[in-house]
Amino acid sequence: MMKIAVASENGMVTEHFGHCEGFMIFDAENNQIVKSETVANPGHRPGFLPNFLADRGVNVIISGGMGGGAVEIFNERNVEVVVGAKGDAKAAVEAYLQGSLKSTGSVCHEHQHHDECGE
Image (cartoon, rainbow, N blue to C red; front, side, top):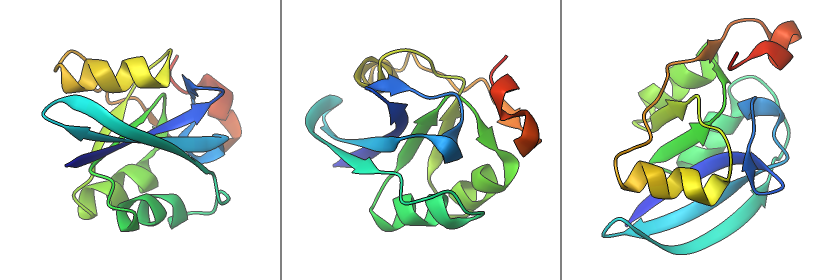
């Protein structure tokens, strides 16, 4: 069983990981989605969200953009980070499971410019 979280808003992948509405968490088995749930974003504070998701057993996080600190914590927790994703959250997970969704490595460096992430 694999758990894949997507930083999302209204079912779509969001541009900025920390400021998303919530996380759609998909359970996948044999490259098929078997279950999904949505967890509200418990609040953006440095270092909290990566541990929150890792503690829920998430193996992969998909987002439009993400700060370097979050990427570092996910790496320490052995959670694969896929950034640069766009569009429908479920479609992004399906693309990941098929091996066609690759990370662009788009890391946000400055919070005050979070609107520019992913551009």
